[in-house]
Length: 141
Image 1: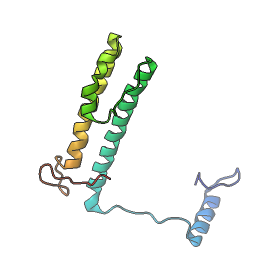
Image 2: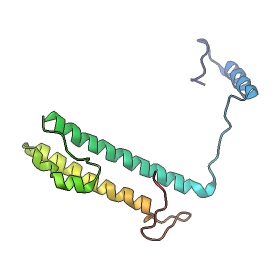
Image 3: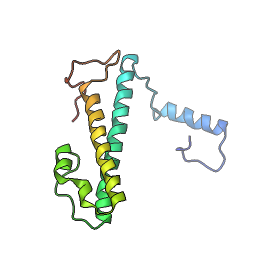
Image 4: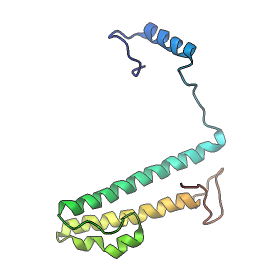
């Protein structure tokens, strides 16, 4: 009800009138209960999305550190493990603490890549979601 613009006064009577008006006009969407057999898949995809977002944060942190220390930009994309290995990112930094921080970021990226791949290939078996080893469960477009 916060999204509905109204005057300063808000109470249950006013809110109920606005809800009734929206329902009569067909402007209030009906709620949707996710099917029971697909809830586990939805939760797994949410966890994958969380891991992908964390991975993007770590990549952004490495790129920001690189620019903060006025180093030349990376010639390759850091989303690929082979590019990270070829660039030898921690050696670009002279300060030992920054070097250690970047080394931890690269290790975290490798671990996140592996976890995301595990979710995509279905290595995590659930009761309603199972696929043979290395067979994709989800199509990622």
